[in-house]
Length: 196
Image (tube, rainbow, N blue to C red; front, side, top):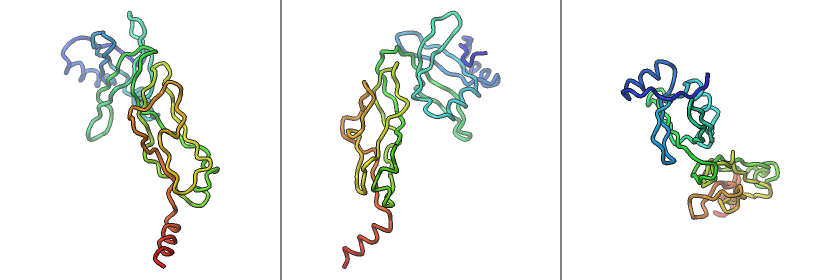
């Protein structure tokens, strides 16, 4: 059985309650000039996808009986305030050539090739994800920061990162992604030297 289901169109509150009793999470699909469409997603399927991470960066192919397939991207997941479990999900219809804004995971590589980290420095990640404008049909899984040659005190900005083709930051300024901080022992040693 497919994890997606369209709504039976009756009272919204009844629809939500019945969906949850049946093991689904209610949701809505909107956008692309079409009418909003209530759906329900299998609870376990949604929870698995959420736990895998990057759910908001994933392009899904939605199959609804009697309708053409559409691409959707999740635009929000509402959660129970106590249990932190999904209670509602919003999807937006998009075309492969649509430009959308998504948070993309930052991956750091070549830790062993960083002189600063070899000296005991610490990689301080300021932004584990960055918001990029990307083409819907070519959403990157992550962006990569190469730490080769990075020394203590180096600061890595968004302009230092090679972005996937067609992707660009949503923020115009050259913001910080990470830096190589000195180890606490070295900071104390430098402070002592400065005081003498």
